[in-house]
Image 1 (cartoon, helix red, strand yellow):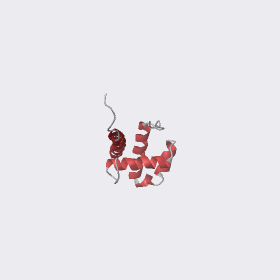
Image 2 (cartoon, one colour):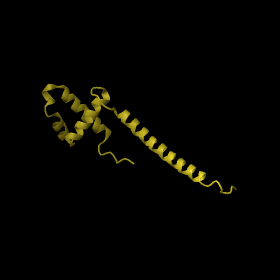
Image 3 (cartoon, helix red, strand yellow):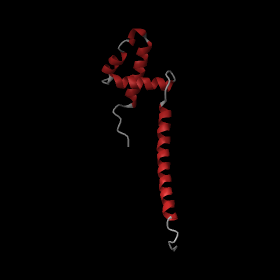
Image 4 (tube, helix red, strand yellow):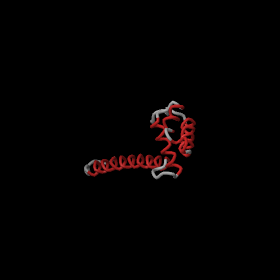
Amino acid sequence: MPAPKKYSDELKARAVRLTLDALSDPATKHGAYKRIAAQLDLNAETLRTWVRQAQIDNGDRPGNTTSDAERLAQLEKENKELRRANEILKSASAFFAAEPDRPSR
């Protein structure tokens, strides 16, 4: 179970929007992360991470999008479950193959 979210989605979206607007204007670009993070009571590196991910999701920067990362996590989880099921089936088949003299009911 994932940890509860520390920041709301609305705050995150607002912070990213404000930062992207500030970064697009050369006059406000310098120190934008620190300034906006301080205004919204956030860590500047947290804000930088959110903005970087938003840029990736928008196609402005190369990398794995949020939806790709979620899909990859889901596939890895499914793969882990299937490997576990295969191990159970292998051990069960080995168990039943090892006792050919066992009487059937």
